[in-house]
Image (cartoon, rainbow, N blue to C red; front, side):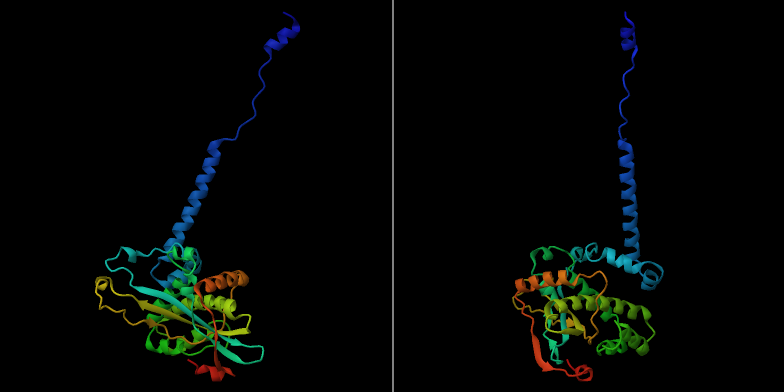
Length: 288
């Protein structure tokens, strides 16, 4: 045996390159899943906290609302002995200052009808406008007479909903939770109404006020569904005044407008304006 053969025969095989360990990838995936599950459970617990004071003043209630609504809300009415028997709708109209300086009101538009004209929106359990109507009606029903009188007035002076909040507190400061719940619900509805108004009437002039109305339109009761003489009960709705338009950082005005206009065309909605002109804020205060 030659020296070369001896060297070749005694040579050890080259070491194979290290392969990534599947276990590490699995551990990382599991850790991420646990963190996401923990966040989900935390926000779910915050969202279901009974006390609104604790939920919003101590816990991150606003962040929980944004996380849960509208797609993670669970509605157990479908399992109840009495199924849901009311159509929830959010109606919107705007007060527009035209380039001529005239100020006109628009016609009411059923935003829920427009949203539901898109087939895929009907498959969602909670549409944005329906969520707004439910929150607004629930908060409105919790108000006393003094607060309802205040919210029926116009609050166009000042920024956002601060004048409305201050007027509600001045009228009755005995139930701060009811006031807080209503302001949050009105904020949601007015913000949605602002985007609707900009989409439908923004090209006509400046949107200087929006008005919303949550409408509950009952259907025939389940137990009376086979009665040919049965009729739908009368509708109920919120009685709210005008508030300033609300637009928040992160909202995409153009994207919303493109989408909502397409829905409006599909729904056959032709938004118009009333003939009556309100020259000043004072003139408009008494407008219905």
